[in-house]
Image: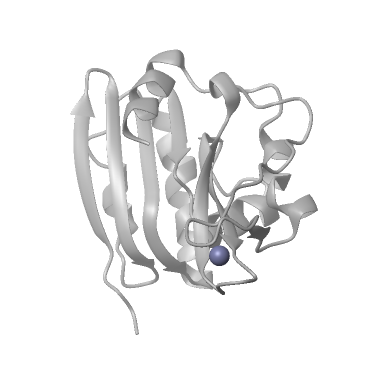
Length: 177
Ligand SMILES: [Zn+2]
């Protein structure tokens, strides 16, 4: 079942924050994302549920085009389905930078899953691969297990080496994450 894509826009000075919710497929009409831009465009991807191969191709083209019109694209709160694409496809962000991703965890004892947000420290891509933080389970306090391949999950950082997110963006996003 496809969940239609919904977008919400918020403008803060020279920044446009676009929140996406649902699936990115041939039915999503993401070309509309190219309209009425600001110099900095932040895509909040927290509620993206799925992206299919058509959606991936179209996403890359739309992001490239947006990137050619603005100063910076920033990706915020990327769920695993989007992190996978950023990891696999060098130009998935069209030249934008990933600021924060959700880390998938689960508890072996309770069988419950959980996600934790990882953001670039100070908005800058770290030179070394980050070590995975450990968290206790909210229900039983046992240490959560990472629910993906640890060595591969941060691979997207290789695609954005030495780059960083503008400080005003970091400050704004830190408030709401
Ligand atoms: Zn537990």
